[in-house]
Image (cartoon, rainbow, N blue to C red; front, side, top):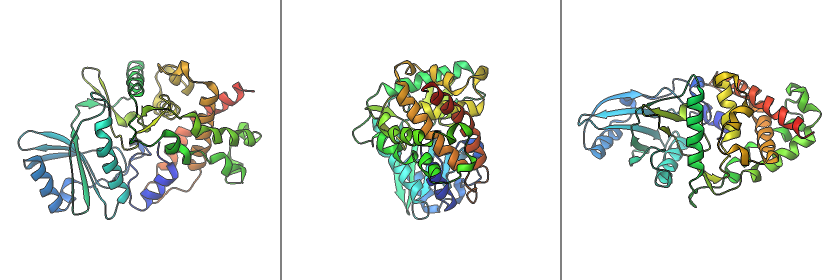
Length: 335
């Protein structure tokens, strides 16, 4: 899960914020195919071996570059992402990262990388075009299928070329320390106010709690999932892939499902409990990650809205509410 504050800052500077928020917070920053430099479009057609016939712009995410389906005149269909490295270096970095790691991802779940090119400071990656739907509104069948796919991902060892989850999430767990120093302390829920020392200690332990060797997507959410007609689940957008505990994804994913409208009124704990991995997770480790992430997301939701993303803080608040309720319950469980 990318740093929500770093993402907001990047977005405010016209950099990529694609991976930190979901489609309901999207802006209109996508560039249409026609807005790409002619030299970049020509390079794509040379690499593909066919002129472009039509494109369909993706609506989810915050990338200010191009992302969408491209259909070539020879009938080939590819999902392309293109970012301007000169003005949006974070976009280019993410595209390079995803291309570099594509060969280490599980066949049949992650999309297959077809090619990558760089032209005129732009980075373009082309993946197989997956014909599927995003889950939503969530059903139990879809939820269980996605959780099963996530467990299948976790059964794959992470590549040594990937960063550790411990390092990848370390920057997310400083919220309670900042609150204890006075930052927005007056806006924190009552259950947290009297236990800040305990919460600070829990968030300190959170990064080490997710150490491991399993493959972790680290940004699982509804708009990074496609369900094919056959029912097979495909997980897309892998620039943040890392090595960690197989369950690392779940404390971030479960509250997002609740925020999107969980089936049958499930809360975050019950969404988590449906995972095949849940029973083996130590409660102390889960408590550290959930409470630590709650502190950071609550604190982020209290910040001013970044320029160009007026809905970001409302989105974060909607996700922070079920997350904070889960953190409260886990904290009381240990009392």
